[in-house]
Image 1 (spheres, helix red, strand yellow):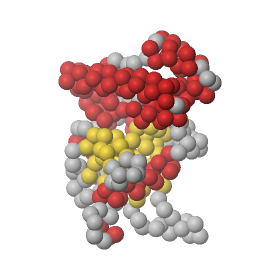
Image 2 (spheres, helix red, strand yellow):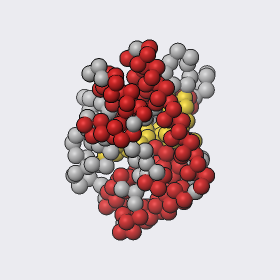
Image 3 (cartoon, rainbow, N blue to C red):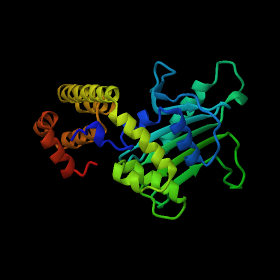
Image 4 (cartoon, rainbow, N blue to C red):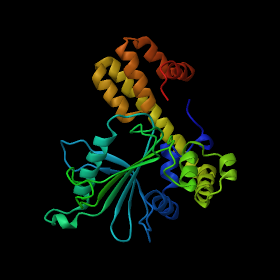
Length: 284
């Protein structure tokens, strides 16, 4: 079921990117996640696309930020379990590095970078709220490579006591972005975030933009799936993934694997039936 803008949580890409487009909000969120001090950031670039080579796969980044000393921050909201997050983070890292350095510049010009995935699932199944990775020497684990590239994976479903209460509230708020939760929250971070959330949700301009994006996605889904049925399963699924909603792409793949093309056609047009199938296949 398509959500109204007032029902969105921060886990939803649209709300997350619009909330983080506020410089001060973005700065304090990054400071909290990384436990560092950031003096100033450049206005976040929403949905930055890096497309360096004609024959390579481009990268679209949710939040791409620079600070006053040139550090690069890339922050992604990740819903649904995906087993390729580690290699995806590696691919993002390579593209960000290539994008940030000009031809002929020395490697020393490469900037410090942080790639952050906020996940609504545990990507490494160890119960941690946060997993931080840097390149180290296998023979001497305390020896850092020193390439200044850090990757972090946050987990809203963490169970162990590895972060402070403010961070726990923030991670809970990601999936429960409601007035009720914000009112009982103790941290100033959640309260500041929620004021920005209210501003976005009550903006007529934002609502119009959201509805336009919904319509575009709906059309892309229908076009991609219809072409997939007509032109071939593999091509259709790829286009559905690239152009449409992730849930619909997953459902399409399952139905086509089972040769249920009639059910797929009905799901494209019938929202209630589509939701029924999501529940049947446990597509969250």
